[in-house]
Structures are given as structure tokens and as C-alpha cells.
Image 1 (cartoon, rainbow, N blue to C red):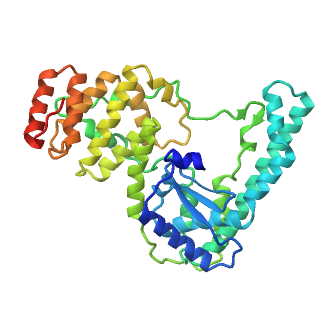
Image 2: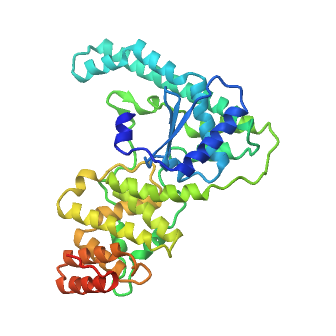
Image 3: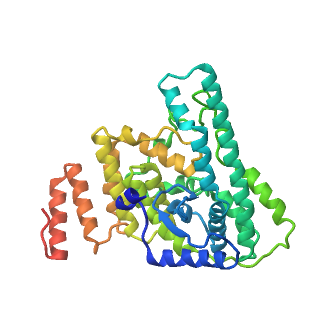
Length: 391
């Protein structure tokens, strides 16, 4: 935890922290719990997930905040994680792992020191542990729903929240419309760049070493969880109370997804989120800064032969739009990337004449295209605007 804090892994926003703690307080004050001192932490990770830790902390990933639409959905997620703490699930997992000595068994297998009967015993331990963890998730779903309903009356939010867990990106489809910012009159977008690559794998193997993948799942299938909640909720009077929107959280979280994914070189996700933001807020020229910075990073890594080190060939769970962006960054050359950057910043709807960073990006773009005269003209325009020289 300390290392992660030092590495800037956690998101520090006073308004967001206050809001999350208000939701937590509602849940704790309305339920008779032994767990009262809980710390909520926002992780910058783009993964749509949340988890409870043994030190009475709950980590909520920024990626989760970017897809939740209402306070009620967020409250159910927090209630689910509080339930894990209340039921001592984290402690039980640690004890069981220690008693089973499963890590030592795994070490022997990986070193080739295990006999066949030891491997069979290890397999049974792993399957039992996964099954046990799935049962804990069901218990947390059940208690979490109880905690939630003691505060909130809306009966659709818990199911909506579950539907969004573990998803990657937004599953609404813009298709080719997503790439409109890269379609120019003189240089139309080449949609051939979106072609699929047969070396990309959209499905996982059904086995992990000698273990069946479906038996390793730590969580029940989402449909199974939703069906269990639906059965309980169906016995309640359906409530149509208008839910409290949290657009201000999801919007800022989408921007953070761009920053974090770019930092970690998850280029497909970063560009996907940036293009969706451009579609949602077409007049926000600051988004253009992030898009061009991303294209420059991609250009440099492709030019320097580093791209393949970060490019993922596994796309399970990707929505259609994310797959298209994934194909785009795989197929495009670094020369084409810098050409798109030049044309993109050449449009007044994208270039912000009051933003010094846009001048610098355009100069860098011209230099990478070996257009030194054009770069000098932009330096002159920069000097006239900001009264300082750029090298």
C-alpha cells in the first residue's frame, strides 16, 4: 500500500473523497455493523472494479467511477465491499490460504519438484478455493443488498451496478463515427486501418496450465449474481424514484482514464477514451491536447520499435469500438500517425490559439515530418502571441 501511495497510484480529490465518505456514512449510520471505521480510497486503475482489504480499507477503481451513472449504483458497490469486511471475508481468505499451503505447492510444481499425486492435490485445493471465493461473493451480494436497501429505495440500481462490473470501456457503439476527428477533406480517413488482425485473440484458452479456467473463477458468473438479486428484489415493491446522477464524477473519471492509460502505455484504451470524450464534448479543445500527445507517443514507440512491447494481443471483453481502436493502432504506421496529427491540429475546431501546448505540439509534428520552415513559422506565431521564444 505504501509503495502504491508513493508511486502516485491513488487519486486525491477532496470533493470526490467528501462525497464518497457521505455515502459511506449513510450506509454505516443506517445499519448496525461491527465495522465502523472504513477508509475509502480511489485507485487510478482503469479496470472497472472495487475491492475490500483486510485493514478496513475499500479501494474503488477510477475505471468503475467512469461507468457508474448514479449515486445508488455507487452506493450498492460500496455496500457490497462493506459486507465483505463485516463478514470477515478477507481474514477468512488469508487463513485458508495459509492453512492450505497452496503457495508452497505452486512453487514445487513450477520448479518441477511435484509428483503426480501432489499435482492432483494442488488442483483440488485450487478448485475448492475458487469455489469458496465464489460463495463469499454471493454472501457479500446478499448482505450488501440488505445494507443498501436500508438507505436507498431504488430497486434497479444494484442490478445496473452489477452489469457494469468488470466491463472494459463503454459498450454503447459509435463505430466509424468514433474516427470522424481523423477524417479530413484533403486526407480522408483510411478505414482499411480498422481491419482485424488474425494474430489477435478475442477468447482465452479454456485451460490455465493443467487447470480448467472456469473452475478458477473467484466470482460467480455475472448472470448468476444478477438472478439471485433479481429474485430478492422482485419481492419488493418496485420503486421508480429518480436516481441521483453523478455525471460530475463519471466525466472527470473518464479524463483520468485517458491520463492513467497513457502513462501505463495502454494506448488502445487511452485513445478510445479520448475519442469518446471528443465525441461527447466536441468543443472542448483541451481534449485535442490529449489526443495529439497520445498520437505522438504512439509515433515515437512505433518509430523506435517499442510498440510491440506494450501492445496486447488479447482482447476478451473489449466492446466493438475499443476493438476498432485496437485495430487502428496496430495497423497504422508511425508516418501515418504524424500525418494525422498535422491535419488534426490544422483545423481551427481543434487548435487552441491561446494554448501554448498546441503550438509546441504542432512544432514537434512539423519537425517529425521534416517541415522545418513550417516549424519556424509556428515559432514566430508563438513569439507574437506569448512574447517568448521557443527553441
